[in-house]
Image (cartoon, helix red, strand yellow):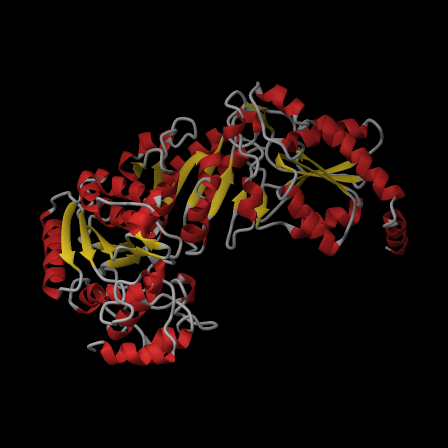
Length: 260
Length: 335
């Protein structure tokens, strides 16, 4: 909230809605990483396909120690390493790829998982996160098709299913449902969770890690049912908060309501 | 200087295919992605030799481009090849955001370029990709003139670090360079000396420019012929020297006249040494079906257009308001 207030632009609702999942990834022990050695060869990798969700990734990474928390205040500012959509060229430790054009990160992650599993024969894992509106991009399904084709059980696709996009509800803009059936049809071990329930989040990741360790040959899709703007009364489940920052008064109220 | 003569005829795509095998032998990190037309773009040669490092992605160029990015960000050297229409333009956003913004070490081979594809017609005859690709930051863009140069250029792009694209064609084209002809990314090569007009060409039009130069010589006009396979990085020095010493330029390419090699030459000379330029290329139209030779004539991509354009450029120089001839005479006198 503070980051977005200072930035005066950016996405508020989505990042708040998926914060619990990022906490699990970066601070819950799901991803193997070394914050002081971001290029560590044994690390698991995370590719943010939904680039606009980056504020929450930045916050999670700062909390995990990749860079000082004070730098969070530079979000979207001139010359910042915290670009409005992640820019690998800015050299922020732990950012694996640039992203912002939807439907691409999911596919970059396929190449990474192929490299790890098929070429290097390593046990590294790749996580990628898309939104649900992003599923309207056809290239998402090209990627999904290829993950199964190559049997990439080291691949975990998280779908943030908050049912909102800039123009409205998913169904109204372009219906991508049923998402579960689609993921199953594309060959994924598909797990639906309450994206605000930490136990369910951890159980889903545990299942993925078990599948990958056991070499099932099946990739995992975790569909996280979330509410945009979770924890802030005036933002929650309101698609109008997709692409806007709070003003000072709204940020103060939001911070008061959030259980930090 | 090397004397260039016609040694035969062979498609540039064969050079690309052979080079992939050379690269595969030299570097185990080289991998190749197929887009269903592996026989056409000759990636099948790599597939046969290194099946464990070849991945078929199917008819999904966007996915192949971004998968290549993921492989590159994992330390691999991925090549993806398809028809240029589909691996330079259909996947334009993937190239821009995933490959180039990441500066990922991805190599793209764009085959069946230009109208010499022939019977397949306009949809498959890409004539615009040089203009687009040239604007991408960190780009390396190569257009080899014959089979051997295609092989050298492919090896060079596989051994440099950074994103790169090579354009090659389907039909056989004249072979006139040799194993010892130098090739370097970022360098254009003078393949015929002359100071009366400069003919700057790439790809299949280089040999046409040589024929045009021979015909011009019959009229006492000595044309300098420059083979410019490196659209980006661009050889500013060779181009500006040609502009200063010849005072008139013709560019020739199997591409739209807008934004390709001609555009690059115009930008560079306008800034450093403005001279009259005539542009030989496809003039703002789509291609069509036909035999390659018929189409090259129909769209004005033969030595005859280069010849006529040279006369026109010389005339513009000598009669033009730039007063170049006068300046050059003064320089020669002073020198």
